[in-house]
Image 1 (cartoon, protein in one colour):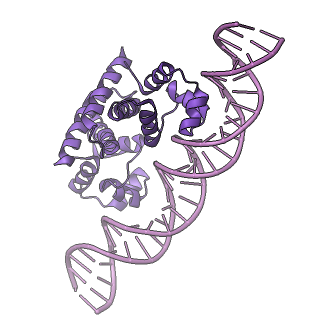
Image 2 (spheres, rainbow over the protein chains, first blue to last red):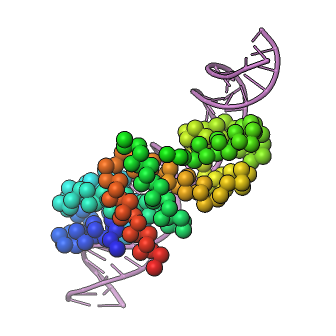
Image 3 (cartoon, each protein chain N blue to C red):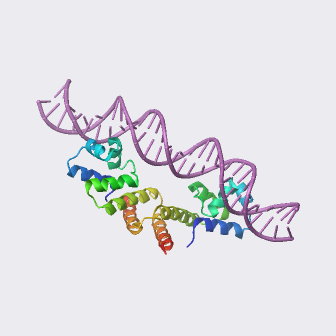
Length: 97
Length: 97
DNA sequence: ATTACATTTGACCAGTTTTGTCAAAACACA
DNA sequence: TGTGTTTTGACAAAACTGGTCAAATGTAAT
């Protein structure tokens, strides 16, 4: 199962870059990027988009990864997760109409 | 489409109680309960359980309502909502293994 | 073992968001 | 108008986020 951190770590390694370099490019502290890559901290939406652009990753893919990490985290110790997701789906559909 | 606020407002009205009374019982400011009922503020999990107990509502039902409100709110302006929910579902399943 | 460099960790601060408290305003209705 | 209920908004306290930095740890070569 993939997650946001893995995606950006793999992208960085494929390009052979150091945290220091990415940090300089994106103007984000390297300690924070390290934490993002290990899923210890969640980036802001802005930051997600910065990563997508810099690593030339599909924006939507990265956003979905990021948001779903967050949702899964919120529901992690809820055995009601299935019901919650179904209910949320209905609510979102309803709002759209 | 139901939501947390409606459920507790209906429960209160069915029992013919005033906000003041519920506030005293649950030790929650009545202004806050008014906001919960109008979905203007989100309660904590503790508070959700207090309501379930006091109104004798099914705990699970109320928790699902509350959590799904939250998830739907988080995804409200994301047109990726469907994809996000599916991805989150996978992640939760995966974690359970 | 020491050096050189990369990554991770943790303490700290600042800014934001959330939560609770309260009183005044708005509402309902006899 | 008078009485009681609900809603609103301003405010403060508490909790949470996000960023900065330096020290600690890890890694590989010499």
